[in-house]
Image 1 (cartoon, helix red, strand yellow):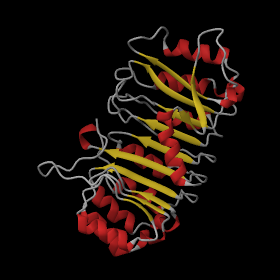
Image 2 (cartoon, one colour):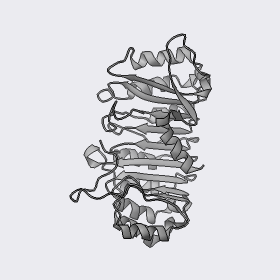
Image 3 (tube, helix red, strand yellow):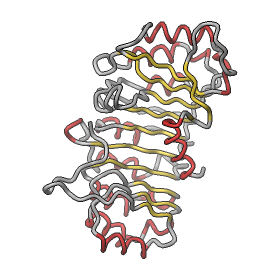
Image 4 (cartoon, helix red, strand yellow):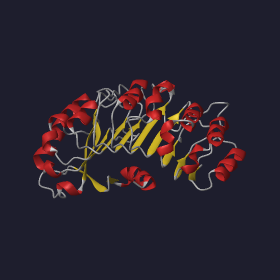
Length: 316
């Protein structure tokens, strides 16, 4: 997997593409639609201008699209997503799993901030999605409020991403307690304690051991208020030796965390090290560039603390 290309693909969600497919919404009855397997289908209703409920919208999807050929789905808003949790849409997807045998990529909760801030999205237990779709290769979830995950075994998942303004510690522990033998790419946005992001290094221990993640090649532990502690833990973690790409970006990384990376020297074998949105000094930036000259290094978005306040990139 080329992880820089994957990062471009994540950004592609905002350019009308997902999982290498053009994003298509349901069209009015009788309007032409692309072949079912040649689109990433966006299922979404907005609270202020919705002409149908999410359940009605989903029913129209399974009635008008050949779901047996669908490869990618993006679930956006399900109405008042800041008040109503995601259990309804999750249940609908799980109940119709037999009608979606080729589904391989699923982004759940893909709402822009103008529709619903990331910390306002009320999620639910997403484990049923993994249980209902054993052939799923890619699962991405946005929103941390009421987010839950139970330890699970999934033999085919390759990409797992949680975008949150605050990741519940139990979710981090559940990821570490799950068996993902095929997982290559893991990304967790840990977020701010003000929004439920009180995950500690201890909650990440099982992930950092890598024991249940034999295929892991990219690890992202990002957007954290304890980015220095995480950097120090990653620098000596067993999982680091097998990684090709590491992201400790979007958080409050300072010279102390970077010093731990330098002292270990461990990241020098990486193809890519992403530290963007950081609070490093100019001198430390130059030290990192020299020490990891053979690594594709992202040191963009050099921030300055606001009256000694170090802030993450994504919280509310």
